Length: 279
Image (cartoon, rainbow, N blue to C red; front, side, top):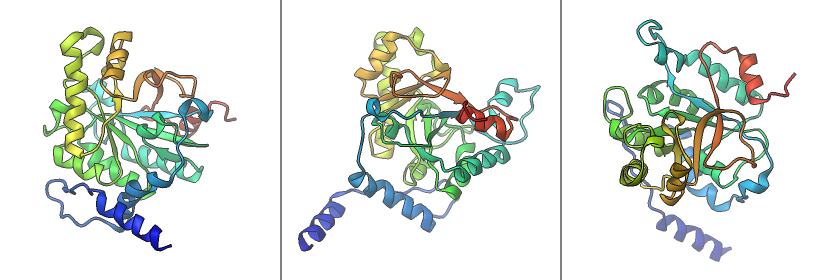
């Protein structure tokens, strides 16, 4: 027992806990649930058994979101309207997941097969500002996590998360992945331009949150075999597409399908998307 205590204390002293930076205007006073989530993210992976995704055997719904917001003008912004889910709808969906025994996991966990029955991955493309104001408080209330794919050259503008927002969220259990540097069509990129979109965005995020970034979302779902090869070479371990479907171990981890969650979907539609065999 003394040896175990010494080992644990040594591990704790070795781990460098990331700095916590609150969003602008927020006092740094994390809730008990936030502190417990941070401790779990640091220590539980040391003891959890990891499995290979190819041997897991379980289907995995990967849900795709963009905006969580109200008051979108459908006439002025038809694309944004279609990509928006209201906070009330999102809350209803999280409640359904919780009441039906689902566990949320990050795309890093997906890549190593660290999931079992009734796991679901929540993904958010583009890194919009409303993630921290609308989505995160609801996720936190249920103890859920998500993966946010960030366009790194849009950090700190008025519509997207700031660098401080990203650090704040990462220290509270939200995972981050790359959505490229400029959100360009990667299928039309090659050579140094393609490497820059994949590697610079990855490096920027990794340095910002002080941990590896290995998840990728292809901008607008556009990719080629060459893009997949470069993503692997750049150190990513998973990449998601906009192909509709439920992922399973037969899928290439660099061509993972997702389920787009659309505005005004009923909870019955949401349930059927998670489990098409549901009666």
